[in-house]
Amino acid sequence: MRNKFISWLAIFLSLFVMNQSAGMVHAHSESLDVSIPVQVKTEGVPAPKGELLFVLSPLDDAPAPASDQIRIAAGNNGIMPAIAFERPGTYAYHLQVSVVDSKKSSIVGISDFRMEITVYNEKVNTEAGSASKLGAVIVASNWNQSADRQPKYPVTVVLKDKVYPTKEQNAHTAAKELSSRWWLGLIFGMGMLVMLFAFAFKEDKKDRI
Image (cartoon, rainbow, N blue to C red; front, side, top):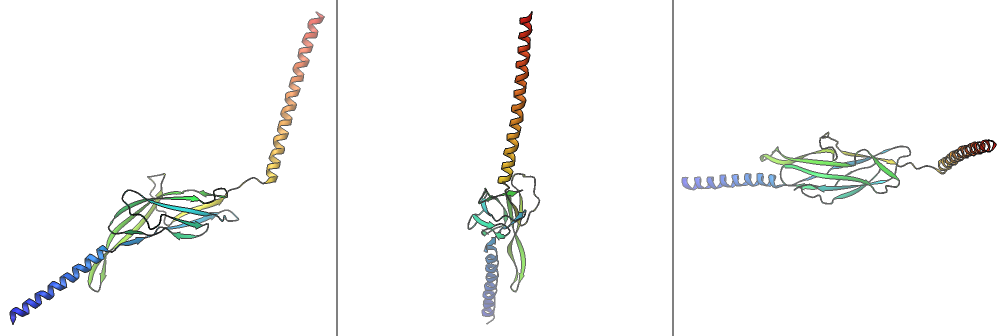
């Protein structure tokens, strides 16, 4: 009887340990979905109404996002398509931003970003005991300045309308150019007359001698 009790106790303890181990592995094997938040601010009155295209490209061995691009209208916020991470590490991406209609508006400031997502293990307390899950930190920096690692979270892009000369401004500019050409022509003509008179006076003087 005693041996049976010890056997059942050993089986129970083995099953308990296996159950705890399986729970820990499951916690480790869970993936973490990370989405990069972005926003489009506007500059000027009235505010521009264009759209921006955000394209995210993985670098090195970084996992690819569910989709590599989104469009966001001026003055709105959004999130890039999710990226699934399965293990800790630091993953780098290139985020490029461009104006959909570049004839009407342009980007003020940074439009190319280097994104670094650091994935780490963090311990959490559950009813079954302590476990671990993945967490992440997102850092953005200027793609064209590798030394610049100041966090810009979320990624912010500023859109501004392009200013083109009006018809009145074009007419005024044309009038100024015409007036300048007229004065230049007058000065040139007067100079030629002076030279002709001087030449004629010189020849007349020779004839008298």
